[in-house]
Image (cartoon, helix red, strand yellow):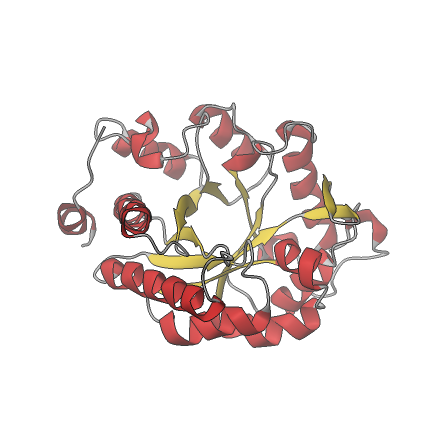
Length: 303
């Protein structure tokens, strides 16, 4: 396994509702938005197929969450010492950018061994992101274990995020906490971000993750989270009681286009990143259907 030396890397590399809408957003065009998709949606595609598909469907970037089912990207041949330069060249040649690396680092653990394992993963992903000029890595909050006091868990997550943000200083990488798991209520999110955010710590707004549980309208959520949002996860789904079934964009019940329009009208500069959870839900549509539909729907929505 290739081990990544952060200092060495720094030295080397520093120097919309689609058809359901009667019309598009007035004054905006598809060229104004940045689209990416998570490789979680195409778990059996190799890197060449992923980048070819992204280019042919007018995506601007890739969010890498595993390649060929290898979730620890530091173990992927695509990012090995021998291949990393070629990987960056492929992205440049296809006018694509790495926009986020999805780690599995989870910050709610209290046990020392579990905690250190997850912090170490976050650090490896920071090193890799810096090496490939990727601005963000994703970490999870993630749960409120019943055996821990809620405030204690919030403090553990806050400390973990701050620890990784401190490690990222001197790099070009920001550590993003996703709204995920039990961490979906605005008050809880703000209690962490107000104490851990800074130059190297911020937030991924996963609209569906929050709305499916809280039902808080994006118009209420966004103004409160806005100072911390650097990246988004975009998806839609239906709900049958608590059962989530993922759908193509605009076919579900999530007020996803309300959130997209709030971001865009507020001059959001980040990516609208489609998270099609094919790896976890093999029964949903194939990536060549769902990811292509996302690009078309978003382009239609924005004119």
